[in-house]
Length: 120
Image 1 (tube, rainbow, N blue to C red):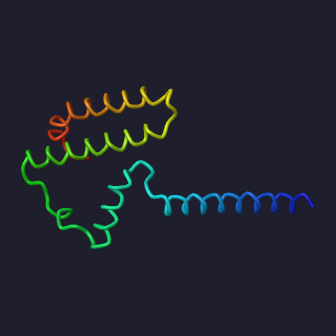
Image 2: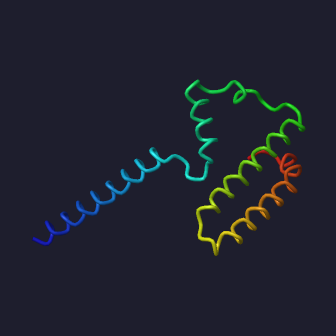
Image 3: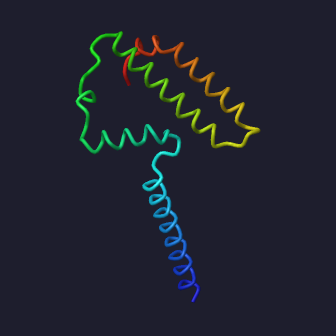
């Protein structure tokens, strides 16, 4: 009797976990990335529908090209952080935005050094 009870509890736990995982996947599939601006998300969806853009396969050959790409990525990360800050309570928003700015400034200051570091 005890073995049956343990097996039933395990099965219930498994089913609950599976249903929570399925729910999370449905939420992420229907809502997309929560911190991406809706206008940018629409543009991304249009680009993805056309297939991979050719620019994804062009390597940045010069240091200046790599630095420009890194600056764009850092700027995009700042925008995503700002969007995430809009979703927190008003009392936390100022600190969130300040942290995003500090991270942006630190990343921009370290961008050149990051290009010098060997790739992992």
